[in-house]
Structures are given as structure tokens and as C-alpha cells.
Amino acid sequence: MNKIDLHIHTTCSDGRFTPTEIINLCVSKGLAGIAITDHDNFDGFQEAVEAAKSTSLSVISGMEVTSLFNQREIHLLAYGFDVNHEYMKKISSRQRKVREKRAEKMVTQLTGLGIDITINQVKDIAGSAVISRPHIATALKKNGVVRSHNEAFYKYLADDKPGFIKTDQIDFNLVINAVRAAGGITSLAHPGNFYSDEELLMLVDAGMDGIEVIHPIHTYALQRKYERFADQYGLVKTGGSDFHGKTKLEQFRLGTVAINPAWIKSLLN
Ligand code: AMP
Ligand code: MN
Ligand code: MN
Ligand code: MN
Image 1 (cartoon, protein in one colour):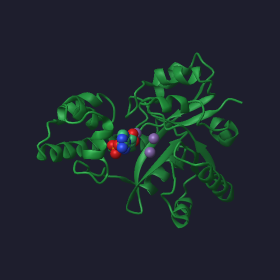
Image 2: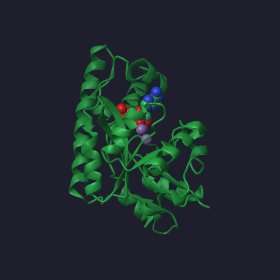
Image 3: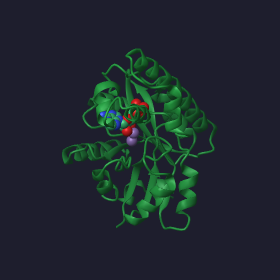
């Protein structure tokens, strides 16, 4: 049975491939369906749908929203929403703006450390994509400040490093309610070991519809834990590769770290 990958990034956020290239790759990997889940936008959806028209691949609308829960950053995956719904458009335009402001602050912080980087350069690198830390990492690499993205993160950009600034996150309740109003569902991205049982229940109580069971950071034990949790609370089980197209390992995961279509029947109809 062909699988479905519900977690993929494109050039509309910090992925390497365009939506059209993603469709071609996913067809070649034998997937039955995908959702493009760029950070804080769904700009790639229309292009993906167009590209998938001549194939048997199904495309579901998606987005990975950087949100605030319990004073922490949480990633909420949204699926199957109406991309023309006013609330969804509002969320993505808000997120684009706050990310641009945050990038400006990060660049100011870096130049304060004597580092060679400008906001215009970062904006050029991002192009029409929503700006995220990897774009800043690319600028640092281009300017010879670091040799790799990894070095950029461990020296300057990781959460506890001197170049980091938090995104002005959007409240998780707002996201859950907006996505529901737009006819979609929300699912907790890569829960890993990051949440207590109490926190998971708070999210369920708030109306979160699903949980990401299958993700590259999940061990089999975690997969089983979240599968049981989903069954116990009647949540939709989601999953995918979190593909950004940047490493060989990810190329291998695309087509393998994916879910059974039966898990998301309601989304496919
Ligand atoms: P942002 O959403 O702007 O905070 O950027 C986070 C993105 O940076 C993540 O989605 C990853 O794609 C990427 N990222 C996070 N940590 C690292 C790291 N240590 N090395 C490379 N990329 C990373
Ligand atoms: Mn990313
Ligand atoms: Mn994430
Ligand atoms: Mn992701």
C-alpha cells in the first residue's frame, strides 16, 4: 500500500526544493499523497496542486505553525483547511511579518558582535520565502563567518546562542480555533519527549485534533506511545519525514518515514 507523507518543507520556507520539484520527487518515491507543511505559510500549495494534476499523487493543504504554548514554542501542523479562508491568510501574513522583524533583530544582534551580515542580504537569500534561521545561516556561510550551517547554529543561531531571538509566537488556542473554522485539523508536530502527560491533555482539551506519531526523531517506543495516546483520546494519527532536502539521510527518509492512508481517511475525502 502506498504511503502518505504529511510533513514536507519547500523553498517557501527553509526547504531546498520547489513545490513542483517536491511533487516529482514524491511521485518517484512512490508516495500516494503528501501535505506540504512549510513553516508559517502555505504559499506552495497552489503550485503543488498544479504539479500533481498529471500524477496520481494527492495533495492536502498544510502548514507548520510556530506557536506559543505554556510559555514555550510549539509547532502545530495544520491540515485540510480552506486556503482561501480569511483566518488562515491572516495567520500566514502575521507570521511573515513577525519573522521579518525577528530576522532584523537577529541581524542587529550579530552585527553588534562584529559579524559581517546585513538584513538585505538575508532577505535576498530568502527571496519570497518566509524568513527563518537557515537563511541567516546561509548568509553567515556566504560571508565566510562560518563554514557550515551546523557551525552557524552551534556558534550563533541555536536557541541558547548569542545571535538567537525568539519569534513572536502566536497563541496555540488561536491556531487551533482558526484552523477548525477553516475546515481543517491541527496536529502536534514531533512531540518527542518534550511534553508532559498533563501538557498533552491540555492540548487535547483545547481542541487539538491529532498528534504526529511518525517522525524521524521518534523511536519505536515513542511511536507506540503516541499511537496509543491517539487511540485513547480519539485523535488523528499523523506523520511524515520533515523533509527539508538538505541531507542524503533525508532523501532516504522521503517515501519511507510516512503513514498508512487509513490513518487519515477523513482528510482524504
Ligand atoms: P526558525 O523557525 O526560524 O526558528 O528556524 C528553525 C529551523 O532551523 C528549523 O525548522 C530547522 O529547519 C533549522 N534548524 C534548527 N536547528 C538547526 C541546526 N542545529 N542545524 C541546522 N538547522 C537547524
Ligand atoms: Mn525547518
Ligand atoms: Mn518543527
Ligand atoms: Mn517541520
